[in-house]
Image 1: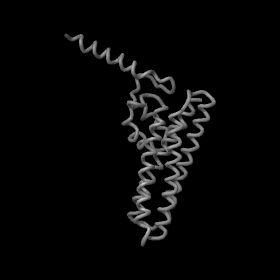
Image 2 (image 1 turned 90 degrees about the vertical axis):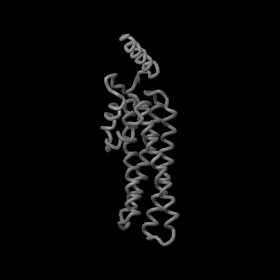
Image 3 (image 1 turned 180 degrees about the horizontal axis):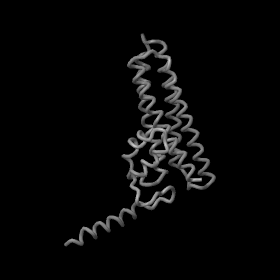
Image 4 (image 1 turned 60 degrees about the horizontal axis):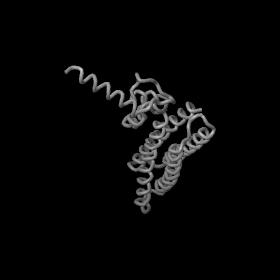
Amino acid sequence: MKSLPSISMHFLTLLFFFLHPIPTLGSTGYDTSPTDYIRTSCSATLYPVLCYTSLSGYANPVQQDPAPLARIAIGVSLSKARHIASYVSNLTRETAYGADPQASAALHDCFSNMDDAVDEIHGSLRQMRRLVAPGSESFRFQMGNVQTWMSAALTDEETCTDEFEDVKEGPLKTEVYERAVEVKKLTSNALALVNSYAEKGE
């Protein structure tokens, strides 16, 4: 009677490794859990706490593989960038009449930059989904594209926040600025994970 749980656990262990092949790139061994792997990977980013909290929920698809970790980080950044682009677009229409001209101009420029960032992050995500095997010249070319687009997106997001430096303090500035900064941090983290994967795959 006591042997049944042991047999079941052994079967589940074998089934786990059958369904989840051993990562051949960046694996840290079986003694590290997927969440620990994400935490360790995030320690190399500028915002490790945000990195971990935004990605730890994806531990199952990530396991200990830097490729899905980088891809998911880009996806999280894209989702947030889309949300703030939509949010700023709505604000731009709402404040078109009667608003502080400086605030209206900052909102318009911020939307333009965020819209560009969305396109660049989306392009990065598409490229990540079409990656060839690491180690090849094609892989390095593809990762170079991803790095270039993510860097451009980060620059656009930074430009958005810069637009509000001279806008007078108030709820509008605070709300937009804080949301834009969060997106900027997520993109920065995603780029760091992309760079890490690119280095490991060379």
